[in-house]
Image 1 (cartoon, rainbow over the protein chains, first blue to last red):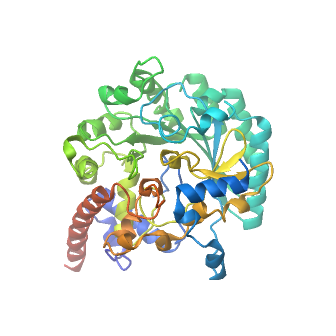
Image 2 (spheres, one colour):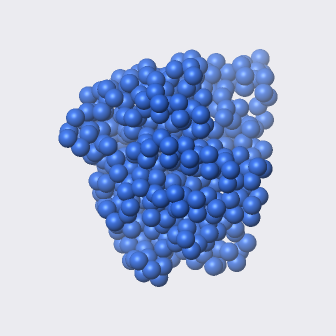
Image 3 (cartoon, rainbow over the protein chains, first blue to last red):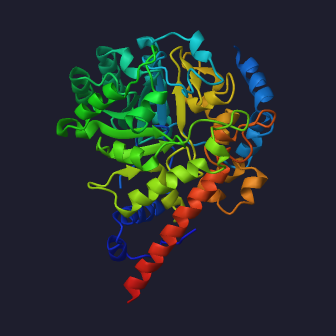
Length: 48
Length: 413
């Protein structure tokens, strides 16, 4: 596992890969919402 | 089949969880089920395509043959009443209703619109209701899209890459390919006026095909989201592995990941499987069935009113989805103590010792529950795609770790 919980937001937004930046933002957001629930609707993705 | 007969059949076919998971003991430890957050309505049991890998028609479970072709309004009204009760009891702030089949658009525009309106009026105003539909895309004509837009129904479409690859599997009953019709539908769906209801594309991985050609084909449809689905298989019905390649699925997915990660084209198409793995590698959550340990809050209501588990389980054995419950007699709380449902809500406790000893188990989560099935054992063991998942996760982890190290050192300097 890679611990990203202490990365500053400004640094996250400066990631060269937009895919990585978005994923980091999602992880940081999920720290406040740990109760993710599975969806079977494969075409759905939660908001970035 | 009676409730007791369903449980007996489940115990015989899948000793784990049905004979070995002690739900009462779990409840005694203080564990509580996650409420239902998503209801899949099987509004139409038939399909206008005859895809050769379809878990509804082509694999182990053939229960569709004994069910009504369409869901009556009485059944979906009862279902929405059950859902509204459940929302109130658990004070849920959001739920999702997925229109599914067969092919849900065969249900007809008027009936779908009536159902969608009823979803919103049935639920308490404190609860947000999203409505989605998974369709083969063949009938996405202008009038249908107008109805879907008006009702706020978000649409996911199944496409398997370039025309030749798509048409090899996704054919009409008389053997003709469906790609041209689907492409026409997607051409309409991606127009600006329909953008808000365009959920994304679902693509089944087919090793032996060109992954980059597939990815680039999907990008031409400008989907907001793509999900790549491993074909439903298990230890008794194993996946195709051309040339005996033990990691054929990872070897197909990795080049797509690299292309997407390096340069996701604007406005940034999302690939759910990859995003889920990335987030899990970084200690986040997954929201999909394919990886991770998040609880499943999904139930299916069949066209006869039966309350069932997710229908990907139909790939395992006849009756694998059955709970013995139905919307006439049972509320959604009743299904939450079904051992099959419980098994998908207890995270690490559902994993085998083999999985728990593997360093990637918190990321793969044992893989898709349906892919763990082995006759005589049940759903307690590694996924039949274990080697693929391990290789794909290792690749993504390595790539992320390097980039995050670079990011941190750039911040330090």
